[in-house]
Length: 339
Image 1 (tube, helix red, strand yellow):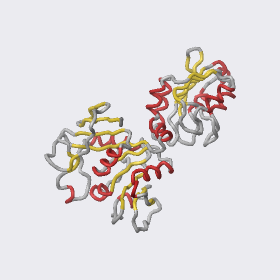
Image 2: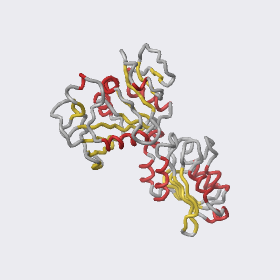
Image 3: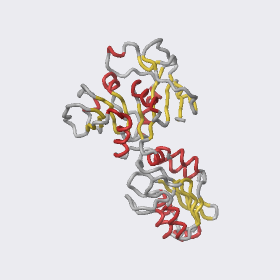
Image 4: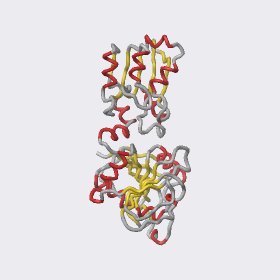
């Protein structure tokens, strides 16, 4: 099962809104096949593992290990539970039951009704950690929310004179910047507020790391918005959550008017309806603080540089201790999980 989880992680950034899944076939204590879900819409882990077995007759005396309950419904691909049954595999070991209501135990039920021996809950905690985005999406009916910001050693996230110029004020090291772009490639969407758009004029892409660019979400509220900003003119998908009397020239830009009485709630509902499974919120301070105060967030990644500003815009604060701390290049990264 450890190998299943290792394989599953290879699908990071490529399978959403599906879960990451790994699968291993074992006969006589020897691995005879393995696979993982590579790309959304393509064959699932079980299919790839079964196809990889050189001698298909070995399946009838093998055990299939899989990190998530085999699917039981027709989606982009046929049910994996049917394939397992039809392949004659007598025993299946599962890490986690699928929280998707389209499955939710039905895959296990199908296997058992067909006479397949099923064991559940092996390395379940590890499987749930790996697919925490998928689990939150189905259990809480909203995207998984990651808050991210960088701050100086003395707790500031921007310079004193930031309002006097336009452009990003870099705090973290170039190496950490590449790590942040890797983080972006692993999530479905990236979110900023109106002030960050106006002051930083960011690209919000993954130019320093391979991988797909996330959907860009701009929380713009009401009033004026700068239509010359990069995100509205580079042809990449951008969603504006706000109310502006503007007709954008690009088909890549879309605007949705939220419920301003429940701005965060209506925004997350819109993203859930669009099957956006995860969002990394990169600022600014006001947007981050609103999420912290609402307690609607799942993890935070705070980058602290070894330089000091002596004044400026104070960074948000989290009142409890981080889950872990890591040194990366010249920076220290604090990883938090919402309680």
